[in-house]
Image (cartoon, rainbow, N blue to C red; front, side, top):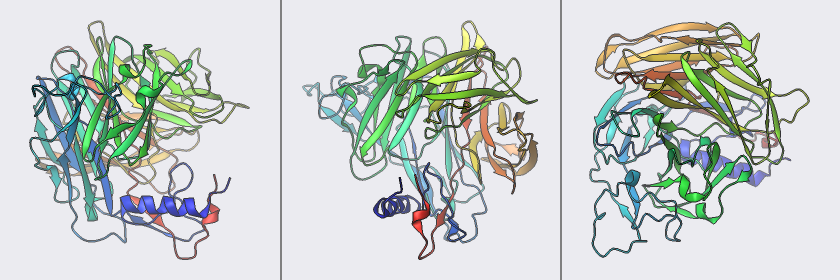
Length: 538
């Protein structure tokens, strides 16, 4: 079905509001240059949101901001700014939920602690919502120049969510990493998240409402008008939520944490969360805490697709669980392969994966990597449906009481450039996967200067088609502090996907976190006057 001219104009206007330039967006969300007309230009404005990190009294959070140097030709040459500002928090007077309509999704204060000004007001309506403003409005990790990361830390148990924007030469590729180390308690371990861009829809396969898990989705509104959000949970038998997840109001410049188990009466271990902003836009991320496996952030998966790549399963993973959801009207059938360092193999007992429409499917892959780093690649099965799915992995390292978990969502390929900040002198592993056999990828990896000093360094890697290459990435000479890694495929390279594992052991606990590196979409295609927009079809 062809898009109407009005829908194309609306899409262009919406993207222009975010990037500062117009663009044509093809189905699937990728910018497309039509018939040689149009010019690719760097974005002029970008937005990021970081959720409230933790309520632990023994937690410390590091923020690292970075913008790659060398904006594309045609960039606005003004200096640019990039900073994050503390956001307010919505608290529910009686631990109730939904907003002004009495839903049951609220958190009763940050991570259930009920902290913040007004939390102890006597005589307050137990069902009333209140917006608690941030105690400090000082900007966090403001950038002054591209190519030099900036870091900041906090050990506050009520550190707020952050919202912010970058413009000028700092907008293309601006990224912020939030890394939290929790020394003890149910949430102990290492929690990492690349702060998210606002959007109107997100999929989170791999959430749980089981008694052993506490999963909160953090909804953050970056704009000056309210957002209205619906939350939908899907399980192995279909939808799990009714009206409990509807009409959640997120006030301007504010975050609302929602406990997923309050949205349904039936516990579900392998579920998928769909976040839909019916009015406005939000940033969304899920904080998952497991009684036995610690905690980490579950980022949103890439848009549902008929081809999914999940890069960067650690070599020493002791347990891997796949959760997939088919959001469309058709069942989905996939061929499953593990891209190893020597080539693709088919996991024993998992030649194909069948996902029913509107339902989730979970598969325990156990220690699938067998001591070698790998990446999962899902492609449509021969003769099967090409219905899209969203997929994520829960990965566990360690054994017995010393286990730690992290999540790997399906991600976009690195087309032009991708960046991950907060790499340390020890503990960083970069995984690069070229998922298509016979299509090798050539990739330049650049290590920035450190937050406290150092000289950038770079190295070029060749990844054989159908394989995963896991390397200790280059480090800046004379490194002080943490640094950023930028991944750039060479011209004519085969498709490549990337992920970074950060391991920071805590005693005998193998604490770690994994961040995928999707393309930063630091540039968009600006159509020329008179361009035929009918070339774009669904």
